[in-house]
Length: 280
Image (tube, rainbow, N blue to C red; front, side, top):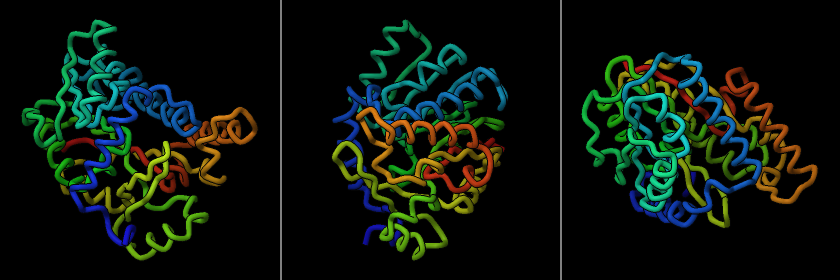
């Protein structure tokens, strides 16, 4: 039953590839409150990493795992000597290449492959980012963490997003709440309905992800939460396309999420979390 254990079936990955093939050309133009708010969160994180240099830098080589249509790649490129974008969706990679070509960036390369097949040299990168729930998408998330650790040189920064196990929305989702309570030792499988499709994700508890990072040689630096306040209201508010108070409420709550991202309870009980860690 979905939710009893994490997603393990490799065939699930084909659904993810198919979904991003379908949305690649319109992904950047999605204007539902959820997407607008999460892009603001990503931008806040990118500013901290590359402009404010809160985690070191400047960086020599940045790796974007699950780079999608390239928004993070093109932002980071002026601040790094070299940028590598890896994604399994050839359609998304094509959109990312168009951005790079329009901007005339010459220090960016893309590889359409799973990270394990992307031939990123061992110890060659000093910054890795992975936004958009990449680790939650894939059944072989630990293999991906292992590949990231192999690519990182000592002292490298890792910043990534994943779905969080415990969040306020469980109050309104009895089926998922029951699944979460059945698997206390680790995260569970979650269903997310978007763009008329049902996507399945792996979630992670804070303790579980911290242990995974330690196992692969990373030290946790900081954790941000997202979609804590927004999940205090019905989920349909997050995908409201019509102007009105529901849409405005979701946007306001999203701004509160970003403002409180590093503080409890948001940083522990958000729908998703962004981890910052350092390779030992």
